[in-house]
Image 1 (tube, rainbow over the protein chains, first blue to last red):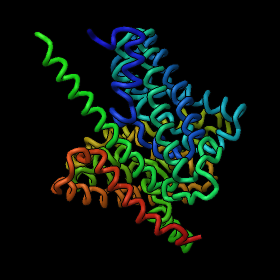
Image 2 (image 1 turned 90 degrees about the horizontal axis):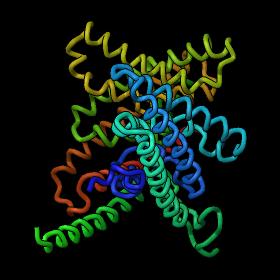
Image 3 (image 1 turned 180 degrees about the vertical axis):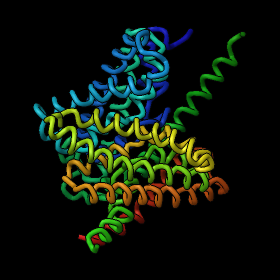
Length: 213
Length: 192
């Protein structure tokens, strides 16, 4: 069974098996930069998802028209156009979010996730699969950075989505919201994810070994 | 003169792109396994970032502003950078083959280095002049190179060390980078 051959398969693949942040390790700059608060992470994640879904769909539709040689500049133009649209929409309807994310919104253009999916998936597959892949990868990225941001926000400032949850006596570890905390938290989360994946792999291998070939 | 000296210290230490602003993390984690490759990448990025700051300023002030096309800024900047990287690659191949061989592999990667687009957008947001933009590009790139070189030295040591299995590779590198960022926090407030 090839998991990537259906819409749902492509979606789940992006969300879990090839999660862009924890497994593929791409798109690290926004991952670390905007995860000081959970609400920022969701904003960033969803903006990236919108761009990723649109660019995946478009590139997949245009894949027979774009010649192999000029595909990189073509990808860049498609991605940059969608980023500009998202940038304008955010500025018009969510000025606060747009101000906090600031520089990192135009930088969605150079987010390796979008580029990598265009090159390795959308350019080779039909529009429906590419759409599933875009949604899965985008939501996988959003989920991963929201988890990271929640950990940093809870321990770094004692709040979650701006609500105080650790009690008034809690002394926030401000290191975690500082840049250094981003690296440390992501490192620790990766260790946990790796441990869980090793366990699952071992269990899968054991189950396969038990079945008659 | 004093102003530019302060800018140098600021870009190198206080507002280091990698350690304090999270720009250019991908190459920072990707090509920092060996000192030599880190040096090559650092030089290539410095070269492109200085040129890109200069070129994007020109494009912004002589093309986008007069034609009232500022909403196309992101597209224009990334295209300028992509074209510039290609040109630099071709020029190096013709002019200095030894330098091309040393930097060649890293050049295509620079297009997607967010530090390059980042510095262009920051220059434009801050309304820097031409000299200021170019210098800020150059100094920030030097800051990137500094942290890349330091980190590659740490990672060469990490390879040798006996770490628990679940920490080998990326998790260990990230935690080492975190500790390095803590030490860079010490520079904050150095200049006001």
